[in-house]
Length: 214
Image 1: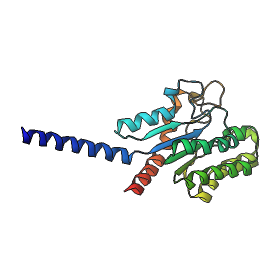
Image 2 (image 1 turned 180 degrees about the vertical axis):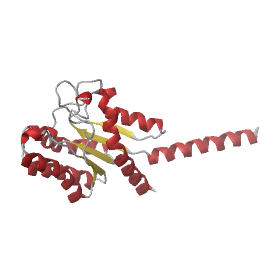
Image 3 (image 1 turned 45 degrees about the vertical axis):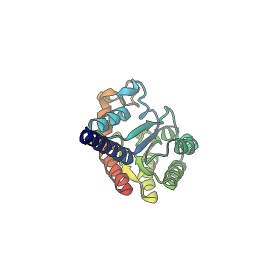
Image 4 (image 1 turned 120 degrees about the vertical axis):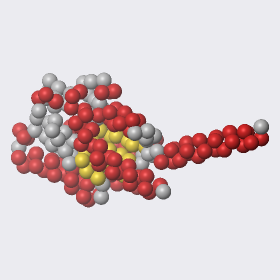
């Protein structure tokens, strides 16, 4: 009887050790975006952020994904909301998917860049890593503006040392089969393609988070 109890206790200790190890390696991923990440026009469970959660679960990862995206959000609005989100969730990794609404409103690229840089610095000050999601806007805004808009995202990544998804809607934007009727928002079919752009960068950043904890 004694050997059986000792065996059970040893097994429970191993299970507890494994559980604690999983919890220690789990990361909190915070998505701060606009309608593209808020799954505008579809069930939230069909959006790319939910697909990300599902992919992590299939890999038996225990990372927590928090989607704090809001349709219509701008870089200024995101900057106002971010401090509270950082205090509340203490994320290890933040994905910043903002700027599209600023661009559609003709906001100065310098303002967007400044807002995004401040968001990155706030996250880094709390020990979090950042992925900046690059965006583009339609060419009817003029060559000078569209070029300046596209350039601000890699500029933020360079100036802050953060990771970059060069263009979140690569292979999606401008293709009617992947867009909703308004021509601005990706449809359900596009969500896997969006995740395809994010995943390699996010996976690399998660490895950095895990390595830092060892």
